[in-house]
Length: 567
Image (cartoon, rainbow, N blue to C red; front, side, top):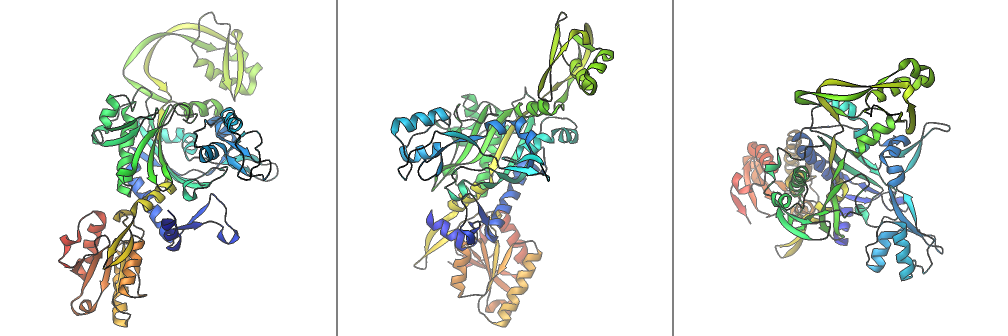
């Protein structure tokens, strides 16, 4: 790990934020190469989860008013248990500290942590004793506006912005389920004691898709694409399986097609991005581990030098989010789903008495009338309780009548359920880099090389003049401009020996080097060198752009584009 991290810092992929002021755990800067790689990953993600889905992408603020997070449950449930040393004042995330020191998986509750600390006499690294464990909310607080302002939070996930905008998006899709809404952006979690570099950050990058489906629909028309993909699974009881997705559904390990569909699509995306399939698995959350909003969740985990790390979470959030925001905001976030044929039904309908409701409830009268009209109650009911602005309001029988009516029903209102694949882009970026890192021996010397997939390499082509002479350099710069104008990410380099330059670009993962040599000046041909094999072909300059475009878009061998002349 240290060798990989050293290379990533030295070559400009990433480094510690606030470095000249001593740094701060949980924050990193992306350098030129790291930023380029992450942007390529984002575009690849869009290809899989936006372009090739019935989905759109939006962008919402990273700051939210407090009301949002009260409704979502984050204000009360988004916590970790912390322990603070009485002697040195250090604060640790309890479950991580217990696992590190005792090798025990602690339940994430105050009671469980306290029991373990007391039973084992666990102390701080300074030998100090701990105060009583307590839950700490992980959201960053802020104030919106001057003066007293309005209380707000930096968002802990991008998802809430999508749920808040649901009515607008449902209108965009004309209410036709299923549909997806994607968002890529920053999220923030005030981690108690982040210790694992890019693995646990306080400010990080997410790519999330909220896929809205009918509550009774758990199949997916595209499932057959992935049905026979074989995946490594660890169920919630810790049992390991190696099955096709179809077999996993038949054995009821994965509960439905939609979850399995997104697990299959996620796996293919990760492999395309450069995750080693042999170091990839899907682990189901234990019953005591799932988030407060999820009925089921599977993590895609990659094996790295940090062990198995979660890089994607695929959760079934049910109708939790839309119901909560509908309740707390007073807005109807359901959608109308038409029946194939209308049906006639008898039901007991409440008829509000506006002449009595108005004078008593004033500004609330309209809202109360609307809610009463949507309620079905027994004919002899004495009162109805309504939820308005987070308050339970009793409305007595004097304010409404109840009659049995027969109606023709053309459809029903439902709260869509949500399947959410959520991607940690920083963790994926690190896992891709680590899985791509390799060493081999070239001409008797060890070479360090990043075998990045061509489609995500931050520098796709390097143009190198063989000699530091004016005519070589001018021709190489001319070719560099030509490739950049063709949309190919290209760098020019004339510093050092040609062998040293090859090694430099091998180490940052550049798939191809184009070399301008003596023959270039004679017949307008250049060589293309392949990073992985170090083999070279000679090609006409006029054919260079089409050849590179095809090579970068595929995994074709360079021998298909010219004669190999050097091993």
